[in-house]
Image (cartoon, rainbow, N blue to C red; front, top):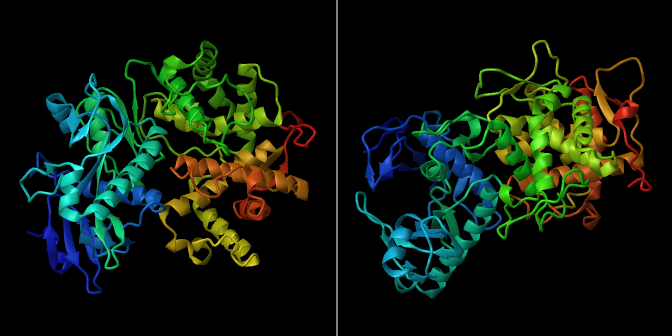
Length: 562
C-alpha cells in the first residue's frame, strides 16, 4: 500500500523501505520511506527523516563512484511532497542478486566461517576471529527474497548457473571495484567498511547500472555496535542526523563523515589522533600531489592498509602531535577563535582569513621549533585552516568571540561561489574547453552538490594560498592594493592546483585523471593560473582587497629559496 497516494502516480512496487512510482516519460520516482526494516520485517514505528538520510547519502556516494560504473540517477527535480527523500531514476531490468562485498569477517559471514571455514563458498584461512580483516575482499552474493523472507547467501557458481558466466563475472568485478573505492574513502575518514551490498540493473543495451541505494547509514550502525560509547558524527545535506543510537553521542559538523573515536581517550588525546589521521592520508604512497611540502612533523608510519595507527608512530611524532593538541586553545586564539564552554555540539562555521591563518601558522612553527621555509609555512597554514574542524570532531566547540567581524562568512561564500563557476566557464571559452569538461556549459543551478562545494572551496581555500605567498586580506583603503605579476600568479596557480587535489582526495576522488603533481599537467596549468587571476575581482565583491602581508607573515617564494 502506498504511503504517498497524494502524488497521484501509479505505484509500481512497495518494498520494505522504498516505493517506486511510474512517471509519464517512462522514468521512475523512487521514494525512501521512514520505515525501519530489521530481520527482514518492517517494524511498526518509523523514524522521521530516515528516508531523507538514505537518499542524500546515496546521492553523495553515487557522485563519487560515477567514473567506475554508471548509476540510475536521472534527476533530483521531484514533487515537493517527497523532496529530499526521493530521486528520479531510470527504469531498469534489475538483476535479482544482492551483490555483497566483504572486507572483514563478521555477521552472517562469521557464522558460516565457524561452521565451514568458508563464506559463500570462498575458502578462508584458519585462525580468523570475528571482526578480522580478510586477506583480500571477497564477493559473497545473495539471492533476493520476497518481503518477509531472508535473502539466501549463495556462491558464485550459483550466480553463474542462474545468469551466465559473463554477467556473473561482471557483477563480481564491479562489486569488488566499487567496494575498493568506497573502502578507501571510508578509511581516510577513520571508518572501517566491513561489508556492504550493491544492486545492479540493465539498460536495454545490456549496460550494467548501479541502482537502488549505496553505502547508506548501516555503516554508522555497525560502528556503533562495535564501539558502544564512541562519538559518532554524521553529516548529510541539510544537516539531517541519523536517529539516536543507544550509548552513542551524535552531533552535526560541516563535513560529510561518520567518525568513531576511542572513548578511552580525553578530548585532547582524540584531537592528537585526529591531527595524525589528517596528515596521514595526505602522505600515503599514492599521494603525490597532496604530500605535505614542509617537514614540520616527524615522518608518519603507515600500516600495510595505509592507515596510521597511533601506537605504531615514533615517539617523536606522538610527542609533537600531543603538543599541538595540548596547545589547541592557544593556537585557535591566535586566529581569533575561542573554545566555548559547555560542550555545545553544533559549532558555527568558522572561515579563517589570511591574517588569522598566518598568526596560527607562526605559533605552530614556533611550538614545533621549525624554521620558516616556503614548504613549512604552507604546511603550517594548511594545518591551521583545518584545526577548528578537527577540534570540533574531538568534542571541543570552537566559535568566534562576541563582536568579532569576520572578513569571510558562509553567506558571502554562497554569493561568491557562482562567480567562481562563471570564471571557470570564461576560461573554458577562451580555450575552446580544452579539458573537455562537461561543467563548462552548465549553469550554477544545474551543478550537483559536489561541484558547487568545489567552487565554494576555491573561495575558502584561497585564504591559504594567498597567505602562503605573502598576501593578506583587508577592507579596501585609499592605498593601492597589490598587483599580481606573472611569477606570483604562477606560484598561486601551483598552490591552487594543490588545494584542488587535496579537496578531490578528501572527497574520494584522489584518482582523478588531473590529480597529479603540478609539473605533470603542463597543458592544464593555464586553468589554475587563470582562476587565481580572477579571484581578486571575485573577492572584491565581498569587500575584500588583496594586500602585501606584514614582514613577519611572509616568506621568500623565489626558486632560489625553495
